[in-house]
Image (cartoon, rainbow, N blue to C red; front, side):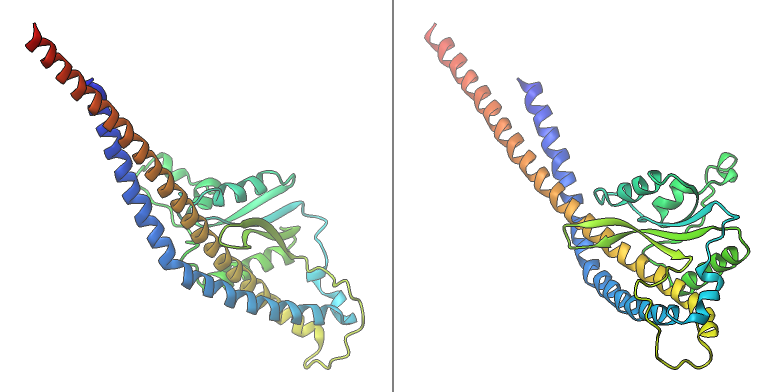
Length: 281
């Protein structure tokens, strides 16, 4: 009986520690939610504008000759930018992205963003020799536009040289605080718009030159915006996961406390019965 009481008390203490941890992480996620959402909305505005410009240029006959519209048939390599979180404890946020990449039946070369993606896809032989060696990775939380520009320029050069057949980005789309959906957006080659009506606008300089100049900005802006959207999804997923964990921990504590009180009451009753029986003999 005494052993049961000690075990229950230890379990209650353990769940209480978990409750404090999940509560604190939930508060941290809530504090980051507003800033992450604002960054995501600004990114969506930018993407809407830059997508419109690229679509307008795509309707021009001269732009059809651009290399950015031609898939490299000589290369079977698909370059994928995979965005995951820097940390776990965020439900299925990371797992959903990794599952989407796994299900793609292609020759894939991954560019990871976020520590979880880096740990999964990046290999470094130095790990075998120095366990304290820390590899550098691009943080999804602290990702900058300069990093996006550098990556975009690299991807464009590889595409032009024929090393890459096409370029895509796997990310989480923010639907609501309860729902985040893994998506893939193809960046290169550029897709021709469904509306093939001739654009009547006047471009200066010529449309082909404008397209070649704006594609690096288009890629960099898209990468940066989707990283910010993915981070907003990560924060939302972690907040909901911590809220759920806090609720479950509270319920477990209540159930264990009830069981503890029953066992303790039973022990007291047993002791009273033994005292009464001893006094009557």
